[in-house]
Image (cartoon, rainbow over all chains, first blue to last red; front, side):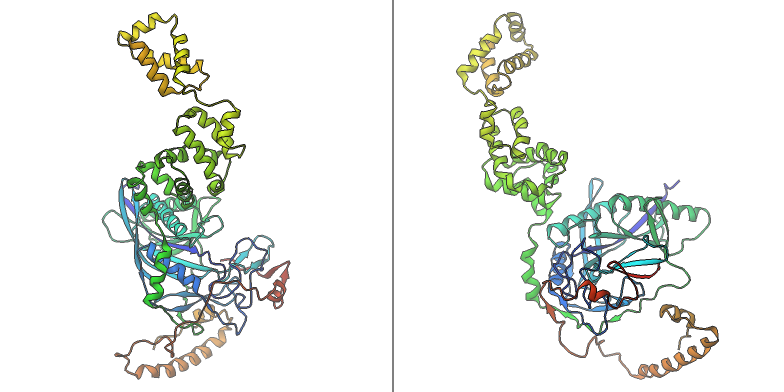
Length: 478
Length: 93
């Protein structure tokens, strides 16, 4: 039914910047405090209070500029966006309109097997609003102004996205980049990163349709659901002979539906004008240049490095770079040990991440234990213990139950790599196996596996498999 | 000069206007705009828009926290208070 329809999507992403203080006041920029704890007279919109620009926000905006390939504007202007709402005590939001700090950027995202360039029109600094709580009292709203004045960077894409999956990829790439450059904690549940989705539909190849904006989506799941619902809603209206009305929609997370949010009686008129309390931001090239080194390695840089310098497989490298904390852990282990990076990577994305997931841990919590982990990996790669024994000991090491070498000794798990001892065991195993030995010599390779298994069992799993193989072959070929 | 939509303006300003006063305010606003429109007589074709009369740049501070007001300070002018919240007539958009 929707086969010949396509969706056209642009995204407005609001990223809360993780500065210590607010955009224009020195109040703490902190989530989860007691109501109205982080509020001063500037935030609460008291008359006569003056906003003072936090340079930390400009710094973070510039870092974002570098990471998202933006043109960083030396001249930008704060304006007032006027609207009335109880959680906006100033009566206006200070934002940037005509002259944003960043313009014309892009990022590359994955779309199927290909890369797709998503152009970003602009990014500007603005204040967040407070929170209204409507469900405590039937007649009253309760207002918490803690969030008022929290610095936001609003990142506005062009309508270059054409499926829910692309939107998710775009959003997660943005999140990854912002977390790498340390300007946003990426915590969507707490609202640190939220998206407004602008969606319209058209028959393939036709002109753009009328768009609707779905406000304030704060999880990947909701973004996907909202897009799919809204896509179908618009198609149904047009198929039924109707027209799409440009509207602001709300996504109801309990029903999975979108519905119109603002009263249609009068359209909004924000009456933007330059804020007379704030002079324009004029940056020098030196100020901008100075921030460039703070950007650090981006995910793509690390991916290339892991593949080219450490010979990792692309899939494994991708898992490690997905989050900065993974990459930090990996690089810490490499710097502290002589175990091959490829070997470390395999264990990291395998048993170590599995352990983290099973025990609901933060990746960062292993930063203290990297020395023990690499010591264990050293024992495995040096054939002191088998892979199998390594897997058994790993959880004990991660639970800090002891040092790897001590654990191996205590549990008597040292691999038998003494060829004299192994030869003895192998000779015992081969007693009475004349029939199978003949089979092997007759060309049946499968028998080798049978013998290796038997030998391992005889050594209680501690025999060095490589050595067992070698000795067995010598014996059998006689 | 564009027409005055007095209903919309009072809505944006959150002012309740009795209908018999609409014409009066509409005319007053028209007069004001007519007067301000005198500015349009100036030829500004070759002049860059000016955002501020000074050449200065915005004054900045370092990213440091200073707590200057307590919850009680902030709520002292609240029309009504419930625990540490402002309590206001319900506004749901």
